[in-house]
Amino acid sequence: TSCGVAVEASKMEKTVAKALRIIGIDHEVDRRTSVAAIAATAVTATAFAAYYYPEAFFGIRRGTLSSWAARALDRHATRRRKRRPVRVYMDGCFDLAHFGHANALRLAKACGDELVVGLVPDDEIRRCKGPPVLNEDERRAVVESFRWVDEIIFDVPYDINPEFMQTLWRKHRIDYIVHGDDPCLLPDGTDAYAAPKKEGRFMTIKRTEGVSTTDIVGRMLAASQQTRRGFLSPRKSGGSDKGGNESGEKLSHFCTTSRRGAQFSGG
Image (cartoon, rainbow, N blue to C red; front, side, top):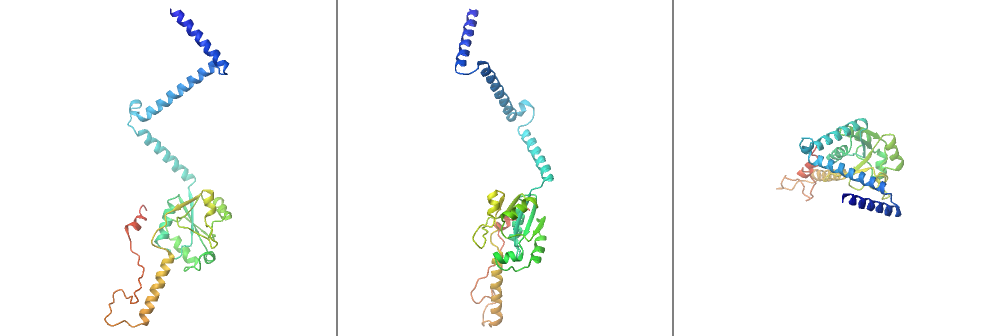
């Protein structure tokens, strides 16, 4: 009986092989492919089982392999950054520098390992925004005092044109250009950072709310006008000394809030 079964099986195998050859498939090659697929599936299943149940395979707790892999990747990233640190570039006028500028530099430094700051010269500021309050030497001294700045580039254009962008890539080894999420437009209405955005090497940071150089200048002018009126016009009898603003104008005063404080959290 067993001999008959073997004969029938042999005949069936020959029939299947003949049918496969008719449709263009080699039976032996197909068998070897199936064996390889089964072996690959078994290896993959074993690897997954060892990862999810390491205590059954290696006698260690679950998560240990992930910790080892994470530490190995962290060591590799540290070695790579020592060999080639990530350099980010951020330009600006930094006129009447305030805590918003400081926060922007802090956030920009967090985007890489080395922060390179481009200081826009006086002529470029006049061309695009108007005359600055502080001259270039004064603004340079302010920028040098920030602890997040590693290097300063002078005489940079207000806009990142393609030629200057290539200079940043090749000469200064810049990896990314950083700017706040507020729009930065040229006098003709075009985006000053259109070139790096097109190349995909532009990073955006959150703009610090509640302060700007324009607002500070406005407050100084308002305070100056109020002081001038106080000296020129006599105080009314019975008037209160509190406030000192008889015209009813309301001056802007900076007040620290938890939201602004949170923007400086993390170093």
